[in-house]
Length: 364
Image (cartoon, rainbow, N blue to C red; front, side, top):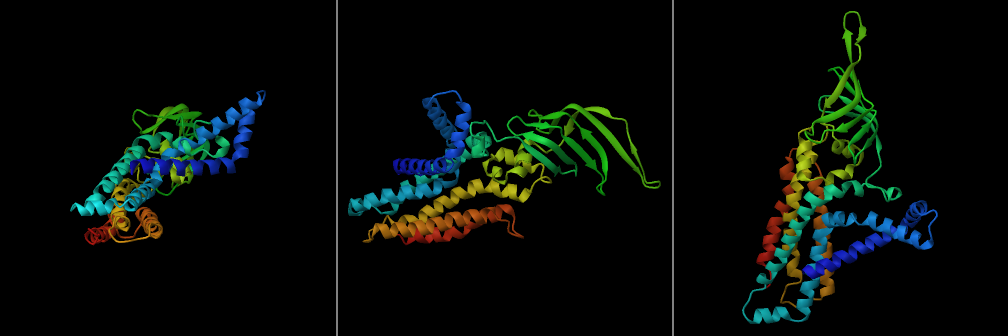
């Protein structure tokens, strides 16, 4: 099953990468042409291949994170079908061994693949996330390009505005922080030529050539008083590069590790805390769902009854894809009145009795 998983995953990834490269070949070729303006055709082809590999390579970890469950079920189906065809199940039953014991290795492999996917999600995917956010026009870059930061509030109501954010280096260009009172009026303006995120404390920005101006309102005379600008070198806020990138790229949240999600939960006022919790719990709920789906579909292949494997494969595909993708939607969908932890594990709770019933009624 492990060998079949590696083969299926490799074929699936290469097919998807090849289609993506062919569809976007013009953009790769344009960038390669700029890199080898005075070079020969050989260097142009080399640059083109290098760009394609560098762009598609990091996506291997993203594909593994999202589709390892489906591919593992496919690997089980191929393995069990080969055993059925060679009548190994008949030989196993002839010596008095229950077919339920055949299901155990399949479940162990699925559990192992799910744990590897968890490690990939926690250690590898966050590191390659900047590469995954690139579009095809940014091929060859080390991360997605800098983008403008519109008015973004933190949990204290302060608005951040910046000309651009470089997510790779965690650097803001010409940032402005606008502190406001309860009625929304500006009480302080902080500007800087640039700012870099403090990676030691992860609590604020180091300001370069920063100045602060206090603004006070006199309710009686309706006069506005602006103070003399003063120097400021640091601004405390939870609006980190990760948070700002999340506001820009919604899919980035699925590439964060649990520790990064924990840090963002401390700034729940900036981002949807319930959504962050759903993504946190879904890392473990997906493992349970993968195992339960495997329990449900194994009897389609590990059986003593005469069956047509092509029909079983179609049934398996319909059942497993419906459950896996449906469960993903339910796990990440907010359900009014139900805590995030319960709603994320709701598909696993529903599938548990179905899995037990399939295991009990499996042919032995």
